[in-house]
Length: 193
Image (cartoon, rainbow, N blue to C red; front, top):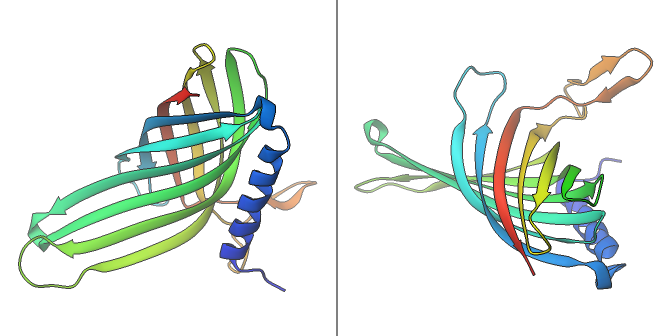
C-alpha cells in the first residue's frame, strides 16, 4: 500500500512537534533571515538562482525543527511574464554537538510553489505546487545564547525509487541511496529567545 506524500509529511510534522514537546525546559525559539542559492535541476547545466527568505527554528539542544520560506521573482519581458517561486520546507534538525560549533543533519518535506502571471494586459495566472523530500547537512556557529549563523547544503526532490527505479545501488547496501533532482545552499542568521 502506497501512502500519499502529503500524509507522510503530516506524520513527519506531528512526530517532530511531539519530540520537541518532550523537553520544554531546554527548548529555544528563533527567528531569522537567510539567502539560498537554488539549483532547480541537477541534470541541466544552468546557474543557481538566489532566493531571499527566512526561517523559524525551535527545539532542544540536540533536536530541532526548522520551518523556512524562500522567495524569488523574475520578469521575462520577451514572454510578458512574471515568474515567482516560493519553496516552503519543514526540516527536522539533528544536532551532532552542543558547543559553539554545532554540525547538524537535516531532512523533511518541502512544497515548491510556482506562479506565472502576465506583466501587462489580459491573461490568466498559472500556479503549481510540487511536493518533494529534502535532506542535507550544515553547521551553525552560536554567538552566545541568543544568536547564531548557519550554512547548509540540501539535496531537494529526493527520489527513493518509487516508480522509475532511479535509485543508486551500492555493493552490499542494495538500492538505498536516493537520487535527487535539485540542490540548494543556504546561509542565514537567527536570533534566539
